[in-house]
Length: 303
Image (tube, rainbow, N blue to C red; front, side, top):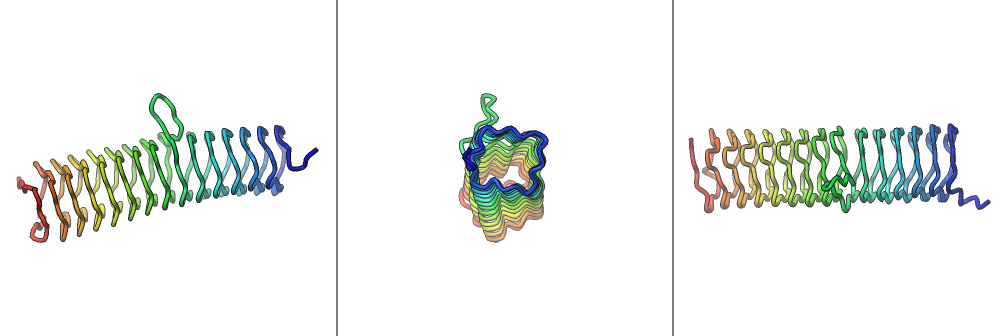
């Protein structure tokens, strides 16, 4: 038997703590109710494998291939998925607390009823994601994440709705055609990030930060942006109508074709900001100093 080729193996209720399966071909294998604590699966082929009710705490899956695999009701606490290639992989009722997905590639992945607390997705890529037509290819639907690190992550056509993402880090990330509506993003960081065609409507962004970020074609309609920091940010084609922007910081920010109709801008800091073609119809401009604001094709309407 080829020691490197143990594909289609079925292991039920086995204790494989600390076992080294590095670079092994485990394609199509089944791990059922097994203990794989601290197992080494780095650079292994795990395509089409099944891990059900299995303990993978502190497992090392770095540089592995995981295509159309299934992780069901398993513990992946503190697991290592760094630089892994995940394609059409299913994670259902999985605990990812403290897991690492740095530089990993996630394509058509399904995350359902998972726990992602303090998970690191730095430099990860989320590709070719669809939610329409009931194709839940990378869905975070109704899940709650806390302090997730998405630094420098690349999101394209991803849908993340009705989700708690408190204190998450999106610094220097790229979000293109992403939906984050009805999410709790309180105290989250988007500094120096690039957001294009992103839906953030009806979301909670209180105390979040977009310092030096570039935002284009963003929908913040009916969101809570109280105390948000947009200093030195560029905002173009943005819908901020009916939003709560009390105490928001627009210092040295540039706003072009932004709709602030009916928004609450009470006590906002606009020092050094530039407003070009900005709509302020029925906006609350209470206690705002416009003396240091550059207004271009913008009419002030005080109630």
